[in-house]
Structures are given as structure tokens and as C-alpha cells.
Length: 472
Image (tube, rainbow, N blue to C red; front, top):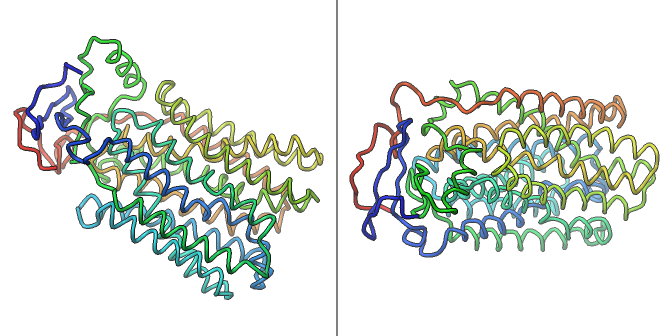
């Protein structure tokens, strides 16, 4: 786009908008990466599919595992709940290490891939449920969390101008990537061969994630694509299209530190909304297959309902990410949460009616509503607080899954024991609607009035508007 300032190859220029936010323009993605930035979508997408079995395959494998190891229903789902706690809990500290330059995205991916593989292996050889909570839930959760957080934040950093669709696409891999394994777990996963299958999954996971992660790299702080004018001064049709998209989701008014983001009140509100809907989503993932089996549905319906949930969950993430670029992030998020609430009642009603086609339809709806909100929260965070500290800011928002994981796993199992599936699904539907109501109060915050790193390209202060040598 010709409206961007001209700089010589290897140089950049800091451009300041009316809010005092600085954009580092002039460097192309190829000059930093050595390849187009679309590679920072493709590789994270593949890596996310590599670890997707953790969240979307466990419920299909739990019956064989619990029988083989002698676990109770509550123990089985506390293992899943604690996994979600560690998977979400690592996001903020890992993000802080990344933003301080202590942990590179490549290192985070390699460490995450190895730990994730160890967690899967432990399901083969450890029967004590409390040790499994240390290995599978703890180490595996940390590993999967490192991969998840690094992939999502890397995409956001490379696409500050158009993050919704790309973030949704990558996030979707975390759901539908496990589809083949869902059918393996429902048809060919038995006490006689479960160790071999889990061992193969673990080895494949490590290879995929480590290979993808080897090529990960962050752009410089405040980087903005050289061919997109951050001030929307272009007059071409392409420039007008970009301007319309950015009008629906304007760039953050400043680069907020985590503490500044918390003080706006918007980050805590996002966190609370994600606590509620995150628990509902994990409840659906963990209990839809057991609910189907309790109704007497055969393995095909059980596997298909889980497969439908995973596929639509993933496709819905990508579709809603793209839609939010044009409809607006906050409005799209509210609509998705309403759908998630309706789906809970639909799954329960169709199940009790023993209507298999309707059950699969509402499993479809549940999968759509139960996952599409994740990339919307992931995109909304840098929309509100900027990209420079996004690894920490989104890590703080995503830590909501700590609480939601407990609610959708172990606590949900206790609710099912006490109130049955009817009580659990009614409660889940009500919680989803409450989360939707909370999002109505989300607003992009104004720039902080004081310094402390809110506007500059690095940690503080306004940048000069003259060209400077690129540091990569």
C-alpha cells in the first residue's frame, strides 16, 4: 500500500496514531522470517492438531482406561479436570517468560512437545490415578498448554491487522485434529492394545510438534505489516476493504501491560465470562459420549457425536474467527455463547427422546458453540490491549480455564452423580447464557493516561518518527 512511509530495505519507521500508539512499519515478513508470514499460520495449525487428542480424545478413551486401571468415574474426570488446570495455568507464566526474552517460541514448542508426549505415555504404564494426575494432567497439561499458548500468540503477533480468521483457523486444529483418533478409541482401543496405540500417539505427537516449533519466531515489538497502512490513509479498493475490517475491530488504543489491562476492568470481565463458558465447553467434551452411552446409543452414535463435536468445534472456531473480522468481535462472541446455551438443552432433550438424528444435530450445535468462543477471546484480547504484551495478557484471560477446567471435569462428575445428566445439562445451559450476558458489557478501553509502557514499541515512552535500523 503506497500510503505507508517509504523506508530502505533493512530499515523501519515508527508511525504514531492519534491515540499515541506506535506502529513499526517498513519491514516485510520475508525480511524477518525468510519466508511469508502465512507459515506462522500453517505450522501452528499443524502443531495444534498434533496435541488435540488431549482435550477432544480423552472422553472417547476414558472407558477403556478406567477399566484397565480400575479408576472410578469421579477419578477419571478429575484427571481431565486437572489437565485443564495445568494446560491453562501455564499460559501466563510462559507468556511472561516469552515477553521478557527468556523463553523463545521455538524453545516453548520443543519443551511443550516433549512434555505432551510424556503425558500420553504415562497413561500406558501408570495405573495409580493420583500419579496420573501428576504425569498426564500435570506434565501433559503443561506441555499441551505451552504448545497451545505459543501457537495462538504467535499468530496474533504476525497478523495484528487481520487476526480473527487466522487465529480461528489455527485454534480449530485443536479440535478436529483428533477426529481420526476418536474413531480409533471407539472401535479399536481395547485393554489388549491400548498401550501400543498410546505409545504411537505419543511418539507422533513429539515429532510433529518439535518439527513445527523449530521454525517459530516472533516479529519485533510493535511490528506492523509493511503493505498495510495502520492509519488507513489509502484510497485504493484494497485499502478501503482493510479500513472497513479495521473499523469493526479497531487496533488497541495502546500497548497495555498486564496490570494496566486489569485496571481497565475489561480483562477481569473477559476472564469471568471465559470461566463460565469454559466450564460448559469442557462439560460437553467430557460427558457427551458417556451421556450417549448411558442412553443406550451404540458406539457409532457415540463416536459420531464426539466426532461431530470435534469437527464442528474446530470448523466453528475458524468460521467465527473470519466472521468476526467483518461483523465485529464482541457481537460475534455474544451470539456464539447464546448458541452454546441453547445446545445444552437440545442435547438433553434429544437424548431423552432417544432421537438419534436430533441428538447428532444438537451435538453439532454443541460443538459449534462449545469452541468458537476461544479464538474470539484470543483475538479480542490484543484488539483491546495490543500485541506487545499479548502473550501475558491472553495468558491471564486464558487462565480462566483453570477454574472452568475444574468445573467441567471433576465438579461436573460430582453434579452428574448427585443430580443426574438432566440437572447437569440444565445447569450448563444456564451458565452459558450468563456468560453471554456478561459479554454485553465488554468495551475497548481508552489509552492509559500515564506511561509505563502503554504506547512505545518496547517498554515505555513514545517512539521517534524517524527511520531507525531494524533490529529483527
